[in-house]
Image 1 (tube, rainbow, N blue to C red):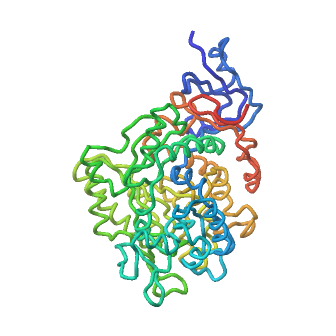
Image 2: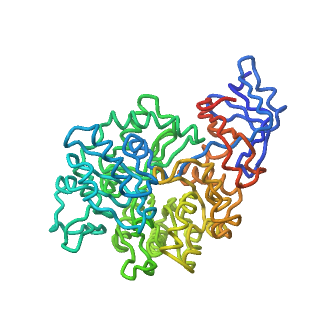
Image 3: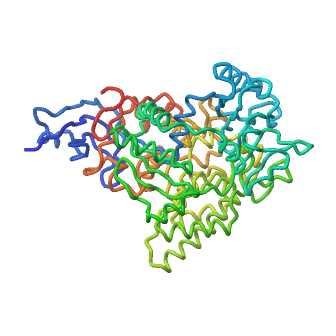
Length: 538
């Protein structure tokens, strides 16, 4: 008789398996689920060496996936200057000054998280403030949305950016009245500085990610979709190194930057290649900017900014050419689109590519739109019709709601972060965090999607656009099975089903039964990865 290695018994298991939504026990052997059902049905699998966990009715879910995360960037940023939520640019500069004092002259000061929308007047900061606080060091600070960079004069000089430097296609070098760069770069202008910053070593990246993996387990996460990479494949190389060393404690879907499309096609790489710890996803493309930087590409101008329609990072014709090449080579695309015009253009392109797939007799690839933050009412149902995955991040809705009301305004803001409308239309949802933009914390995301409220209760009991609230069941599914489906792995993970990997989380309370606002008080008591307890205790 072959016995189970472990049995979780007397639990309240929400399986996310339509054939058996609820159960009270699950048995595990060699990292996989061998049985799901009543506690008494597991008796035959219980041997002398079987570890039995009596959960006393606690809630068990499939472990969470984060379907959109910049894990390596987040891990490295933890070691940099944190200017998240600082109330003024002066406070950000003070933190830069403190770090610069610990570094030799000429060493780069890196950091991120600044959000000018929190500052009086919401004006862009300038290089002058950083020049005064860090005169000996080049400084580069990422904006909270990751679509802008605040730098000082030393950084501009090292990047070779002057008044005569032209704006790159799809990018903006912000300038003063004399035409001099102010120290703010948007979208495709950001790499002009990044290219001048010495890259982190592979050892630094590995160490940072190694430190970060247990924090993912603590959040109940065992699988991630790495949303992008550098042209040098910094993230992919890091994950490969950890995998070779037997230290990759996450299931990683690695997307490829569009800059490397030609290389991927030349070696015949296809979406899905890899194994259960590291697989190839799709080609990451940016269609536009972001709301925080007011560079999301819009059908109508921003409120109070009649000349600002956002930034189209790539034009529609080039996007069609790139997506067609990728799809013909067996590579799905995952396209960043935030503004309503960007989403319309992306869906127009994907409609044409779906037609090409049918004409060529190819199986439809699982193309994705990342964020879908605002879509015209005519476009929202098209994701379902085209069978395109909506990869969205619930915390963006509650984090951005004030900005969305201010800069997009009524009535078009009613089409923003429209998760319930997407679900009702039949669109497939996969939920993530966009960390480090937002914290990777699925329980916080579940709360945001179910209540449409911030932790302090704002904007009130009904939530922001309450018609877009989702049920707990729908949100849990998007963080588990939906993300697994987007990765092409729904047969291997995403639900508590016999034959799938034994990745589970045990929660401190039943989020299906507690008051929606109390979801915030829920803790991850334990996380199992491949049948092994990796976080907490039972």
